[in-house]
Length: 88
Image (cartoon, rainbow, N blue to C red; front, side, top):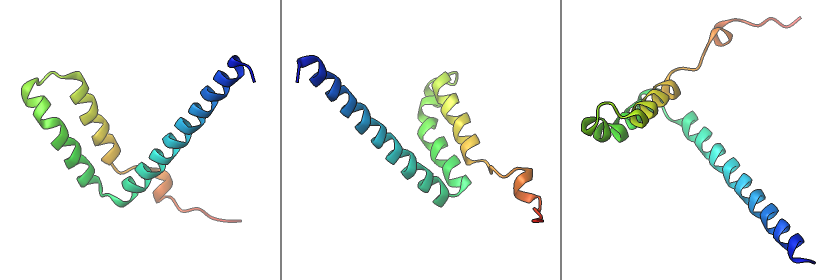
C-alpha cells in the first residue's frame, strides 16, 4: 500500500468511527429525552444557563440554549397525536 492509500484508509476509518459515535450519542439522547419529563428538561436547561445570564443578560449563546431547551421540553404532539385514524 502506498502512503496515499494508507492515509485515505485512516481518514475513512476515523470518519466511520466518528459517525458511529455520533449515532450512539443520538440514540442515548433520544432515550434520555423519552424517559425525562418536559419540566425536568426545562429546569436543567435553566439551571445550566442561569449563571451566564446573571453575568450577561444579553448573552446570545445562553439565550439560544435556553430557547432550544424550551422547544425541546415542549410537548411535541400536534394534530396528528390527537386525531383518530381509521383503517379501511
